[in-house]
Length: 150
Picture (cartoon, rainbow, N blue to C red):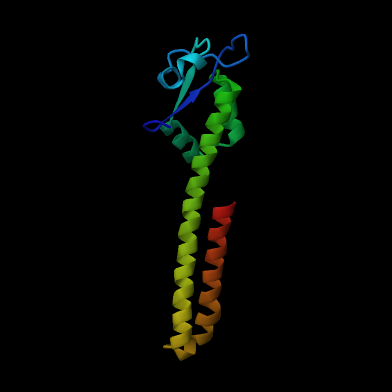
């Protein structure tokens, strides 16, 4: 990912040794020692903008629909797989963020429940705080962990 743009590099041909062939790639041309350079002939890049992936996430598109859309655009399988990996990574990151939020909220609720149970400032509500608020805290923590580890 470079400046919010996912750049996928895929070789389009191979040389006699069945190694991928690239051309005009600054990193490959300047980082490979001259003795190790092979026939570097062509570079084929497909650029997927991060806003497109965000649109897929906002539209709650399924990976099969995204694969079909990318196939209609004429992308090869390696590029499609890379796009889907990036999509899933961003989608799971959003879910994990929500999971951490719910886990933290449950922990704070559990702490407040613990303090109110120990201090017992409202004797009439002792059972509600002990069983009700603690149960809500446990449910929030479990839901948060579900979101994180799903």
